[in-house]
Amino acid sequence: MASTYVAYVEISLVLLVLFILVRFIRAKPTAQLPPGPGGYPLIGNLLDMPTEQEWLTFAQWGETWGDICSVTVLGQPLVILNSAKAAFEMLDKKSAIYSDRPVLQMGGELVGWKNTLVMLPYGDRFRRFRRFFHQMIGSSSAIRKFLPITEQEVQRFLRRVLTKPEDLSNHIRRSVGAVVLKVSYGYEVKDNHDPFITLADKATEQFSLATAPGGFLVDLIPALKHIPMWFPGAGFRRTADAWSRTLVQMVDQPFSFVKQQMATGIAPPSFTSAFLERKDLSPEEEFDLKWSSASLYSGAADTTVSALYGFFLAMALNPQVAIKAQTELDAVVGTDRLPSFDDREYLPYVNALAKEVFRWNTVVPTAVPHRAIQNDIHDGHYIPKGSLVIPNIWLMTHDPRTYKNPMKFNPDRFLAGGEPDPTDICFGFGRRTCPGSHLADSTVFIMCATVLSVFNISKCVVNGVVVEPVHEMTTGTISHPKPFQCSIKPRSEKSVVLIQPEA
Image 1 (cartoon, rainbow, N blue to C red):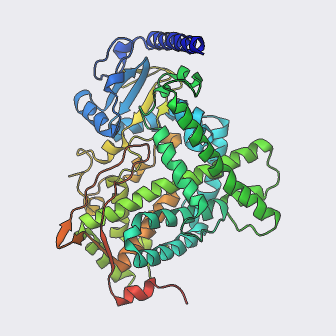
Image 2: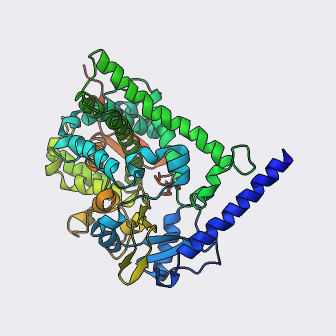
Image 3: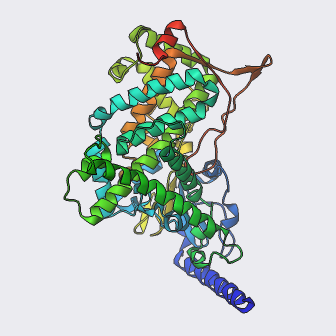
């Protein structure tokens, strides 16, 4: 056993040295790369890579090195885009070059997220996934058939918040999960601890950790994925194995539910059933449909949860914004009914508020990296084939050159100020733009409008002392506001009547 252990150590060290040398040689010439902090021989900027809230470090690099800067880690070039202009020029206008995804060893290969839309390399499968999404939820008109589902679940959310406001985070997760499960699979959530929602929460949290930039050394040294699970330092392999089992359950179980429902003739309309009804799907197409459904289910759930949690935080910190929105709601909708999607075009301030939620509370601060499929010269900079290109979406939505006083939550910036719509940035770039953006946008709007029509949101007072919420975000591909307290109370007795269950 001792000799086997020594052999594995020697082999691993040889692989590591060879890997670094090959990457180092391939990375030449580095002089033409975008500017960035200096690194060390062989390892490059490995020691400079942040382990938490990487978007803040990237922003600091941008202040010194400009809108397009770069680092090299073990021979792998990373190009950071710190402005919307740079991102649009590269990722939109040159989407033929920058639409690919890197192979993330931890999240993609070892855990298995490589089969979801967000991780697919650009190619035929990616285009097939996009067609699935475009046909069902790819436009404002396409999602209209799902809007009643959202309105119904928001009303249930109001009742749960009225009963137990201190459990806000779980209420948001349940409601968003219920909408996405209904749209994806026609599945009706009835229990407060629904197994499918629990699976989605667990899997998406693991996805965020598994794909965070710099989270695992195996993403920088792919040869490490061959280390046996029992080997010292191979804890990441055991973690990946556990996370992979969670992902398989999340993908397989709801898809099997739809097929069972269809076999008995009781399946309600859904994204999945609509395509299964065609009956001419090849095994490959059915496999892709299963993973497309899982992509919708996992992608929409956690991101929308973060946005809505951020909405409540913003209202607690900015009561004047809530009051202004309520004044508009009272004037347009009145106090005898709840808002609906039909009211949206008459609620410009509430629309602006929803946009500000996406800007102020950046859900995916650095997105999932793009990958250059060929060498490129951009703005005088050499971008080698295989470079990872990371758009710093957090900085783009908090850039003082674009948004005045960016740390302030101010919906008026989109009205009189005419500042750019942040949803053009928040949902990604080029051919990698989120295909579920219309569903997410509609869900956030109706939640903001309905909640403010019946609830007042304010800071908590404990023993006579005001508890100040703090806007701090978690680290991960999908970032959430850290837990906070707020007070949620009905605006009036009439509001309570509107919230109560249907007769």
